[in-house]
Length: 316
Image (tube, rainbow, N blue to C red):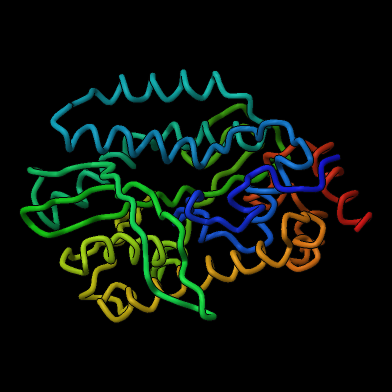
């Protein structure tokens, strides 16, 4: 097996040929190493669909299409999601979660629309706004020297506002009734029950990194809003109600973005293309491998591939 990285940008340390993104930065070093290096090196099979990610993308597409002037009937949205769900190859737990989300899909879309309508107005919005930036900030004596690319959920240039939207879908678990029943309720389908997501008291660290990059792109002249939607309500974080989205807070999280990526570049340079050397520097979380079916980042990999992963670390 080839012991060198396949990406010459990383092999030679020529990061001018490479890119990164907010979502990559948000991963732990170990999950980043797995997703962007080991999966290819160990020839993993394609990852099974993640129902939360797929559903979140679906909600975003309809919500953003509405902001662009399109309108839809609830029944059409529901039918489209059901068809999408039926065409995904999902394990039972993810399939059941999809069925619970199906019951709520229109509510989630409407809440995102409502979040914009209540805070601003529904006119003059751009969606999935692309950006690509380079940075001169240093850490450990190094510049990042890597393109950061991505898309911003919603931008209103007239209002100088940007919004990032997140879905907080609930969780499901197998909880058979003592007395068998085929009756469905809002929170039960057969032996499966749905639990609503807990309300957030503060924005998530990884999402703050995302918004800090978007704010930096606009030189902190656009007021950021980080909006979470769950089964019950809308939670909107702004510079007015949390320090994380103030200019000072955003600058703090942007520094973390720089530091995380430069640290990774330094590890790649030191590894000099040797994937086993890089694995030793990064380390491994054995508990995540052992309990991968309960891990959001790993649950959709095949069992045989997780065994490849364990064997790789055993042979270091």
